[in-house]
Amino acid sequence: MIESRCGLLCSQCEYREQMNCKGCVQMEKPFWGESCPVKSSCEQRGKEHCGQCPEFPCDLLNQFAFDEQQGDDGRRIEQCRGWLEDN
Figure (cartoon, one colour):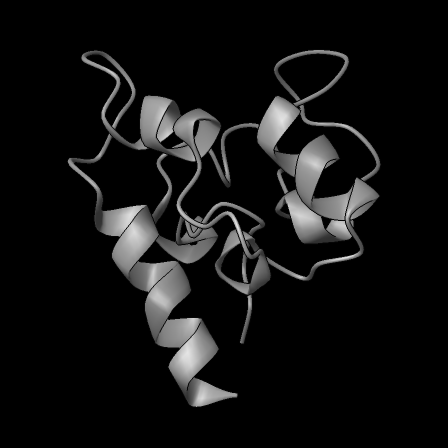
């Protein structure tokens, strides 16, 4: 099951219950602000998640995945690859 546009596993996110977050696939805008550039890019291209994009993994996704404070060392990129293989 696809949990996010970027490959983040919402079911494992520490903010899920705290912020009553349903995941970006299920919400119009993220709880932390007006928009998420990864979510917006994916949806504008008509993709369910970033792994379906011909530019995957793009600079924007890499920036998020390897951010020093909020990144996950690329695990979300691997998750998108896994979702792509599952379909």
